Length: 155
Image 1 (cartoon, one colour):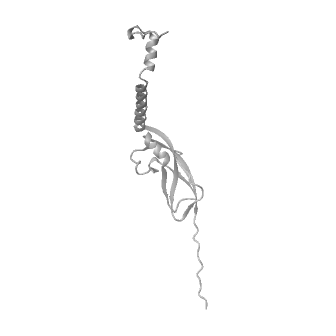
Image 2 (cartoon, rainbow, N blue to C red):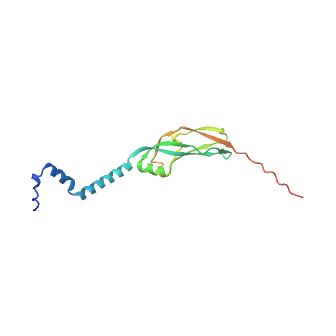
Image 3 (cartoon, one colour):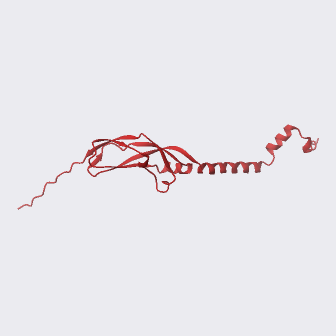
């Protein structure tokens, strides 16, 4: 037995049309899908978005002070392109504040958006929206200057 001859396009049923739409030109459909996904990724990477990052508090202490505990961490809400957020996870921001020698032993340090520092290549493209917590506690200790006894010259 031989297969029936193909029916003309106009005589196909609705099921035949659907089957043909799904199975014909699969290579072209796959290429179109890949291009659509690539375009979506490229546009998504350039679209500004918000995200939380962890930043290390790095106080610059006067030479007479020592930090007793490990520096605290804060969470920073930033607005940036998705590609820049990925870079910031690899090179996280830091919070830098200068602490003078007359600071108390326990210092409640207020943190503002302006205190957050980013890598130079990203600093123009990233905006800080919020910092949590806005206050951190630093425990400090004064260094004691040890007086060295003068060495006397022997007879």
